[in-house]
Image (cartoon, rainbow, N blue to C red; front, top):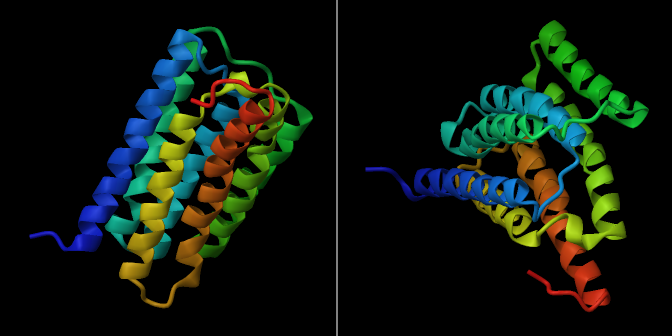
Length: 201
């Protein structure tokens, strides 16, 4: 029988996948207009993140969410590209790609997944800037529900890390940074819609 932390890890992964499914439906219907170049970067970063987090934490229950996120990112990117929404990489995107590549190189050379994973969190936070900026300018480019779903998955993931605590503070970096980034997009979207008198959800 699975213990509560393992069940919560699976729940976080399911919520994460469900949020991606909701986001993809919104994208296909035109309700969300993603920056697909950002999703290209996120797919690359998410793959490195899932692998390094699993090796770093050595705990499958903690790693369900990043693994689910990496797979779902690839699906979202594929759907966006199939609709012809993929744009060219900007210099800003190139910087993020360089940070992610550096993290992969550090991992390869040092065999230290922890430092590589920490650097990837920096890249993730920076890569959210175009999405934050786009939602601030036009809150109708995104719908907040999926972003809050991502945030909920990260909150549960944080609980899983605490329940399975082994003194590895670095295990907190991924779910905490992701909560601030993705949950933050949802919060900014709601705030800007409220300021403009628009429908919140």
